[in-house]
Image 1: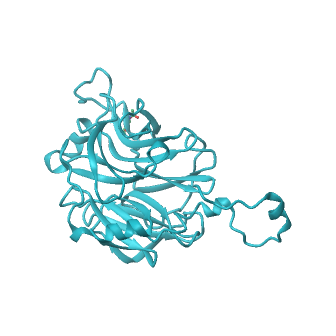
Image 2: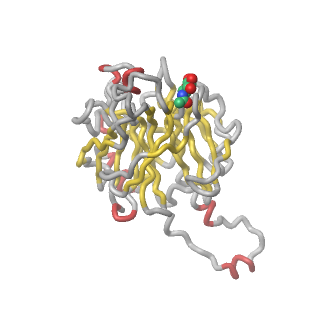
Image 3: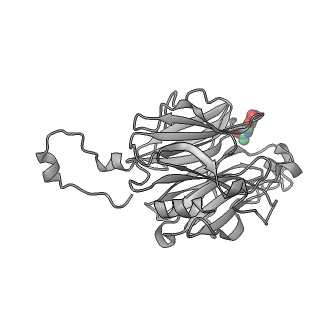
Length: 333
Ligand SMILES: *[C@@H]1O[C@H](CO)[C@@H](O)[C@H](O)[C@H]1NC(C)=O
């Protein structure tokens, strides 16, 4: 959120009520000089990290790069990664990028078993150029009472100068060491803070809905407001807060058209049109894969279905706005 031109209050007051972009509307833009978008994803048939690129002509026109071969293959834990998130380094880590992901090979377990005795670690890789990824690690973020740590993503909390990292987990009683009984917390959003994706604070619960599970959260800055998306019941939910991550959240009714049966909502702003935002969600069950929605009202809600792009070659993903140098380096893969 740096680099905006501030007009003095006196100057603003002297101007007629023109459509002057305010700082908060400018913050909708990913970055005015950026030229494209990197999608960080994986495949049902190969739980490795894959990349796809699009440019400013059409943000949703993602094409696989690297000959549709993996960029990173996990070597730790279950050796299978899902739910990939790309994070921009901030603070002391400016200039770095991180990929986070779920450690789960569903081919060797079951959904029921993996929520009871699954991995409590999240995958982390680092890069400075988006091309070379190093320092693979599996960092345990959850307590022993947790059954898993799914779909990690992170949001830079400027007030703490640390990343708010979140994931979904189910918890069991302290004395139920085998996690065979009923959960003491149904699948909920959990979180911790980190500044380096190596050391994390003790995990806590962020969103819990009692009987109903909560999974797959992502956050989007909207001027001075925040939007959060997560999945409960039959599909994705969008909420908004004007007083921060731990403030008051209001559900935006009817935010996402025809989204029942979709998971993994991930929203991002258009680089050029400050009113335009995209939402990508992963269809679950048969015909799994990414589908898109667009919103053009400047509020990243009222998402309408996009029927013109076939993005189903990707799964639960995240998107990074990239500059020309990064775009060229990624294109050369
Ligand atoms: C978890 O959800 C089930 C219904 O699916 C409910 O019966 C149970 O009470 C819930 N457990 C907790 C700890 O909220």
